[in-house]
Image 1 (cartoon, rainbow, N blue to C red):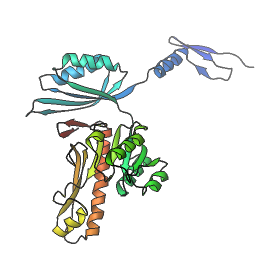
Image 2: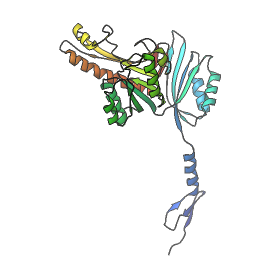
Image 3: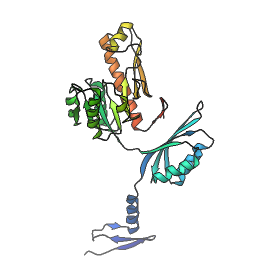
Image 4: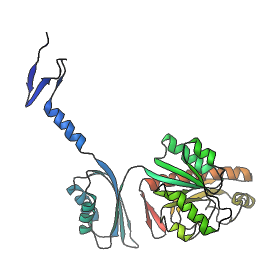
Amino acid sequence: MAFMLFDFIGCGKLQNRDNSGEFILPSMISADVAKTSTVLERKILMTDCADAQGLIAKITSVCFNHKLNIIKNSEFVDNAQGRFFMRTELEGVFHSEQLLQDLRDVLPAQNHMTLVSAGKKRIVVLVTKEAHCLGDLLMKAYYGGLSVDIAAVVGNHDALRELAEKFNIPFHLVSHVGLDRTQHEQALLGAVAQYEPDYLVLAKYMRVLTPDFVAQYPNRIINIHHSFLPAFIGAAPYRQAWERGVKIIGATAHFVNNCLDEGPIIKQDVIPVDHSYSALEMARAGRDVEKSVLSKALQLVLNEQVVVYGNKTIVF
């Protein structure tokens, strides 16, 4: 015979749900509902201001008053310029505008702060014909080695369409043939803008971008360059390096500015080579270091670990 059972534990009343013998605690239900109604966010606070005493205490006190939990904190002082930089990873319920205003009230004048979500960012990759950097980004994004949403690949040649589409990434051909530079860049901007990317990545994109294009994405275009071969400009840099018998080759990832390959540096690396390397082997080794440096630099940028400061960067 089915019957209802009741019991008390503290102030909570156990009630039979449906004569099944299962019991639930009303006070526990309300607690669960309360938990699900409050969604904790994670954001990154970047602070740049004149150096002064007690800045870390002031910033963290404001965060404490907003009931935010500090997950990670890093700071740097440029003593030569008297500038203070701090990256603070926060978790909690954010009232972002009020938080930033409260921070401005306690910081020196002419401070600069950003507060951005720690969520996944969106990129568009620009390519020409070389596959190694694009392939590496696609593989790492697909398998979770790189936390990023690759929204599209845009190329001025069609050579890498098949590679992009193997990963179900849209590919757009924006050929430069028959167009002047202004016309081509307008078409390029049109293809890119529809995806509203956080960043553009030049994965061996072999055309120089004009200042007008760069101005559309200030400090948001990332390029990879074989910059540890500074003496070897123009075509076939690895053959030139082989002919000179260099002992290291490397690559630099940097933000793009109006000066060719002179933007703020994000990440660099080198690998040793010697006389036994052929020009082909040197080029192969160079491709390996290029794709490694680009993906590492991109991850730093996506993690909001990079601050552009003049024509250089601070990397937390």
